[in-house]
View 1 (spheres, rainbow, N blue to C red):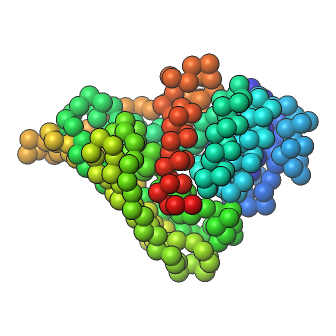
View 2 (cartoon, helix red, strand yellow):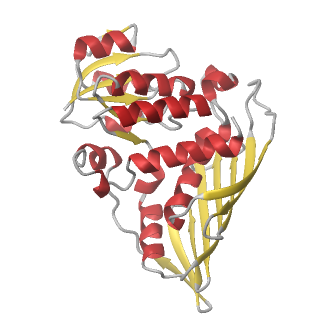
View 3 (tube, rainbow, N blue to C red):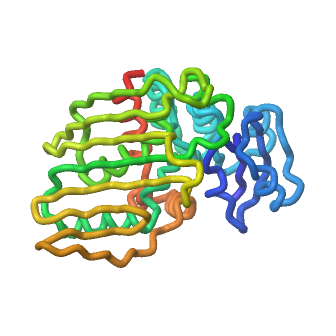
Length: 310
């Protein structure tokens, strides 16, 4: 498969499989450390000054979109209008106008789209989903989700909302996606509280945020996100989710899954999850087989845009 990459600000590396043909790269100037090293493994890859020129000259089968978050929608629309499949870092859009324009472009295209909703493909969350579907804890009543990260060194565009969006969109979308996935429901009401400040010197960046959600099926949920994890912590992130049912509780912590039921606590064996990129490209003709299809990409994007009110 012939692939081009637009930027390297996030999870572009999930698409770097040994058997792809990397036809071209367009840089943003805000690439993550290690971007050049990973790209250079594919030999001398042409670098283009603009993604429009790259798409015109390379004519790829698929583009990996991982630029400044505020540019994702424009990049994706450009590819979709040319019939090129899109594998896009989240959020795919950072406001309602971008979201509507992207969705209209997708409807008019014969190409497929997927968002990098990587949490679904982690064994702990994948197994959690399977257990929920097996009704191990009965009917879901409440979900509490947490995403906590070390701030570390971040690109300067994080300080500019028109390029970054907001922290809840960038970080919280994973938790929101898991909630939508686990409940198979939609959000009917939400309350959102951003910190409105940070201690990192990045004007316009929220160091933390909280959302309270009510779903159509009556489930209540909370999502907390922050960049306040200790710099000396053993891991970069601390992702947790607690799913309370009427017959038990499932909880993910430290990439492990626990079941609390009938007065006992049990650590559950994890199932192997599919690879996110291979799941996309191997099921282009049957999106229903994918863990995260086009509907998931748009629902999670729409949800964080609506929750944060942008």
